[in-house]
Amino acid sequence: MTGRPQNILHRIIEYDAETKKGLCSRCGPTDVRIRSYKGGGPFVYCWFKRVEERYHITRQQYEELLELQDGICAICEGDLTNWHFDHDHKTDTIRGILCNSCNRGIGYLKDSPKILRRAAKYLERPPIFQTARAKFYKDKRTLRYVSTGRTR
Image 1: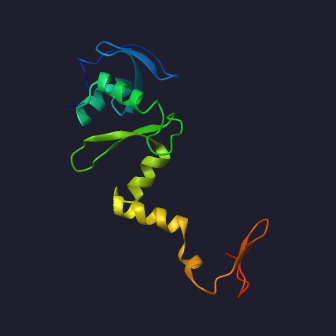
Image 2: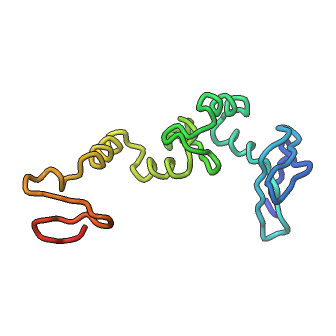
Image 3: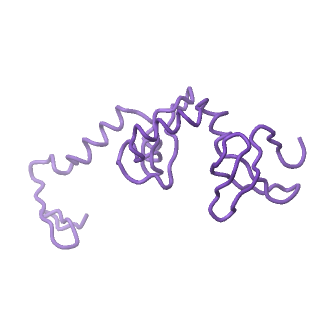
């Protein structure tokens, strides 16, 4: 295929490049993505078309999932201004909608519940607090190891 990709079913009729909102011939009002190709100017496409192809989810299912989560991240319950579909990387099955930080966090921890539980345990009680001779105090800026005076 040469030049820009063509998408007959999801043709963008009009769009605003600044807000990245547009009108898709199939979806109606939608988010658009704008890409440049070597063969010409910008190519504008319906973002949801790619979602349908990759995850096999309809716009209605997406909206139901978003409503089920009350429009917030499924983990930290934060804002979804920069969000991602969390999905199983082996099957591409969607698990939920996450903010960018939570999505990256579980990705870096290999999507492993076991590793995530160990990370939570680590944060709640770091190994240094488990030693009998570890005595710590907090001042305004640092956490110091009392017996050696090293700043951590």
